Length: 134
Image (cartoon, rainbow, N blue to C red; front, side, top):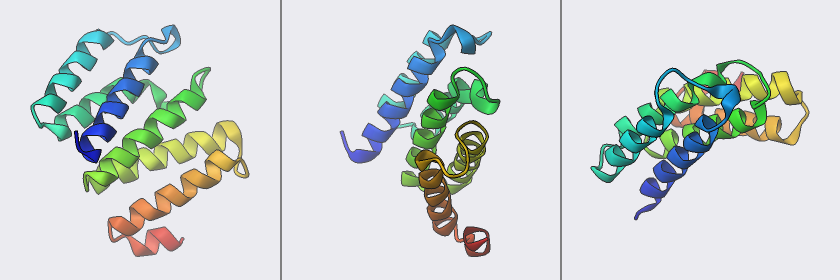
């Protein structure tokens, strides 16, 4: 499996762990969502696998008891999207990860600082230079 496949697999695995949390229960069956994501990845449909991972990470849009896990999931998903050159997804997920990190960990926390760097790199990769230097 190439490095892109490994990233996608990791995103799906993390999303599966997150979905297993009762604090993040969803109406949809998380096991079925993960199975569909795995099948999509094996069929070479990486974009579909990422969309399913995003669906699994959707509960991460607000701070809560699973905030640190959410930050990790969103950051990993964003990194995978960046590797796949899906800069729109990468920027959106890095933005949310960074906002959640600032809100729950604080602006000077090492994870927040790393998130700022990752976000700036994604903006650079998306040719959004003005946003990356702001």
